[in-house]
Amino acid sequence: MASLVFNTPWLRVRSLPELAPTFLRRRQSSRRSFSVVACSSPGGNGGDPVRVRFAPSPTGNLHVGGARTALFNYLFARSKGGKFVLRVEDTDLERSTRESEAAVLQDLEWLGLDWDEGPGVGGDFGPYRQSERNALYKQYAEKLLESGQVYRCFCSSEELVKMKEIAKLKQLPPVYTGKWATASDAEVEQELEKGTPFTYRFRVPKEGSLKINDLIRGEKGLSIDVLLLRMCDSVLKVSWNLDTLGDFVVMRSNGQPVYNFCVTVDDATMAISHVIRAEEHLPNTLRQALIYKALEFPMPQFAHVSLILAPDRSKLSKRHGATSVGQVFKAVIAFSSRLIIGYSTSDSSYNVCFTLIIQYREMGFLPQGMVNYLALLGWGDGTENEFFTLEQLVEKFSIERVNKSGAIFDSTKLRWMNGLHLKALPSEKLTKLVGEQWKSAGILTESEGSFVDEAVELLKDGIDVVTDSDNVLLNLLSYPLHATLASPEAKPAVEDKLREVAASLVAAYDSGEIPRALAEGQSGWQKWVKAFGKSTKRKGKSLFMPLRVLLTGKLHGPEMATSIVLIHKAGSPGIVAPQAEFVSMEERFKILREMDWEALNKGESVPLESTAAAST
Image (cartoon, rainbow, N blue to C red):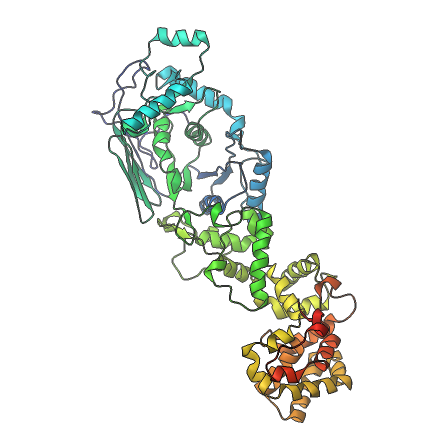
């Protein structure tokens, strides 16, 4: 990998005669110019294997933006029969922790993005943690020093700060002035003898150009002698002149490599063929290209993916959502409150953008739904289809169909997408997931059984995320009759002689008709309802609406016959946990007997002392 490759199908490195004299030694004042053109076909390197990498920094949990980058790398590798490499960039010694690394790896495993090489797997190009590759970085830094392409800089921190201050006063870019670029051997030896700390700085050519045929953005020019920095419609074009770049550090005084140096060495020595990363890394490409050229490494093909945007079209970041699991659950409780009392959840103020994968995992999202949604943030297969399994994504994915413009993160659509995958699960798996959720939430005493089976079948259409199941079941078990009757929406039902229906219903319960009918299940209940309709001379809505209101305490809900039978079953011992505050059928009829219909008809507030247990 350390040799320069010419005229391959995936890379062309051209040294222009008028711009490309040989590299000058480190103490000469003039610098060479250069030109690099990288181009390729998306499929690979003229027969060489496709190798991509995802290189997270273990300084926290995996962000949704990082997860999408990992996904695109994974899909590209799998679709081309290549390798997906995981490399941990832990050179930030102060912030990097093994705990964060473990959390990132756990999130990737949860998403189903298994890596072919990396921590826990190994491989032929390891080690796969940058902190374990320092000897390699020093080796290549010394090679650059010997060739004169880097030099020792002995400037103190105070000197560098002063350079920046002077540049600011002169309204110049705050770059290194090159003080030690032309130092003599004697001057260097004198500082070495004194033990003065030094960094390695890269000699930046005075002029030249770099063009990258980005697989997503097309040809991009990065010019050293022309300054152009423009953002337009999320398409980033970046160029620098010499004053804006300057001789940059590749090795710090403590012996640690700088990001752009170790990334370049890693990608080259790991034989990475394609670098797929976020567009915020595009400005790094110039420094990395200079290092590739100096070390005679072939450049990989680049693909810079647009950023994920928040609903306000700013870059999605932690400020747009909760940053801890505790905050997640507070938001979920607020969201659930709107669900249980029937408010719309499409309000943009509740379109919370959580930014960490662990937050969605803790909230009960499925990895299948998360992967599907992340893939659609900037990619599509050219059809109207939006539902994909991971296997289907591998089959359909192509880097050419990744959009240049930023994708807006819509948590409402993510919930909808998750709901599609939840409902696509085999019934036994869905029932197991929801049953375990109900038990762990303290609503039911057992996670399986006929009640769980029937309840999941009845309520599944109202569940987009597994934790939604808590709300829909609690809603079924609740009996907010007084609040419903006091609402304006219930006025037509109340005025349709609801009091008379309630009296007939109480009489049927006290006589044992309703308990016997419910004991026979849905068929017995439906038979009784038909007879009740004939006796009260009601049918259709005038029959079913008062029954729903009086028996469920609500104006709307899932299929009524199944709901009533389930409420009856829930009253059996050992099904509903005491803390769920379930209002049994017997308690509901007690409330109906004590209802003050006169006060209700007069528009007065109804006493709630006798029904304290009726609300959840």
